[in-house]
Amino acid sequence: MLSGTNIMIVLLGKPIKNWECIYEDCEASCCRTRREITLLDIKRIVEATGKQPEDFVSITTGYIPYTLKRKDGKCVFLTENYQCVLHDSGAKPILCKMYPFMLQKILYGDEPIMFISPVQDCPGYGRGPPFTKETLDEIKRQGKVYLAELRRIARYKKRRVRLEEILQKEL
Ligand code: SF4
Ligand code: SF4
Image (cartoon, rainbow, N blue to C red):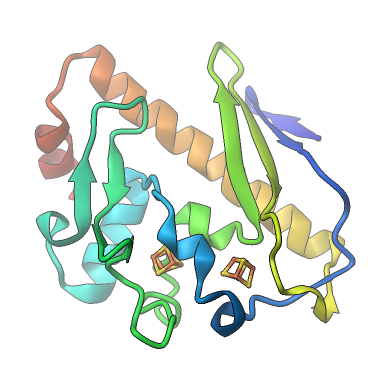
């Protein structure tokens, strides 16, 4: 468990000893689910790709109002070879940088708590390099950035700023 600046990350599930993302084996199954993104994610992707938000952002009604657009049941940034177009630029969204952990739920309050757990049936467990404390710390750090980003969106929503307008202000 990690806490600080009123944000907390809780890990669920068993410890991972070794791991490698062998996305060809699972046909990048993690990139076929709905993926929430933050304002920071959107800004990074615009800068890295030259695309406009309308090219890749879906606006929803949830607490986390921005998600990656999908095509044929997969993320718009996933290639036919199951590679992520954003990987080399470092512009992958925060939640994608947290693989093999997936966001399970967030308890909102004065001190938001994020629960994450290892992806089920990932073929990469037991493969690749040891899963180090440093890797885990980086995943937790990404989780904290994500929660801070949610708070940023929440502040806008409290002021009743329209979601499209938030994007215009931030980009
Ligand atoms: S983390 Fe595991 S399940 Fe997800 S894309 Fe990589 S290999 Fe597949
Ligand atoms: S941005 Fe990349 S890693 Fe994230 S869901 Fe899309 S293809 Fe997968």
